[in-house]
Length: 160
Figure (tube, rainbow, N blue to C red):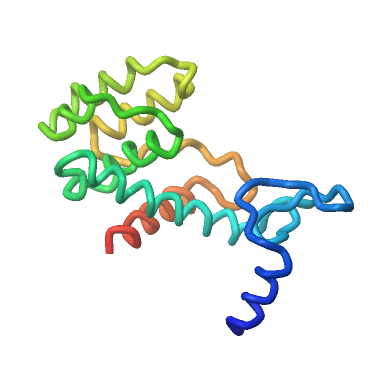
């Protein structure tokens, strides 16, 4: 694709960060991307990878030593941030101290209205053990094995 095509479409459509309805009532986002029929798998993956990249920088800057944790433990902190759950000073201190029992217990004490009990239990177990505990897949894109592998691959890519 030529930059001139990109710039032309961007000028015609504008850059909209929020969903909007065009003059025909079609829901769109970005540079006129129609949301009819949903996003493509590649678009969903691109958005998620970009958000994780931003979150990773934010978490590494705010909690000393996160960059040196195993991927499974890093991912718990990234997921909490992604879901806009505040990482408490108590949790950050437990992570800095490599106190995985305390970190796991703190996660279990989060109110269930922020994350489901099942999610909190999985995150807690993942923080405690440093092993991946991925939710059974319910979407149409992949099965559990592919999901857990892609999460690991994604984390590896972000760490490079």
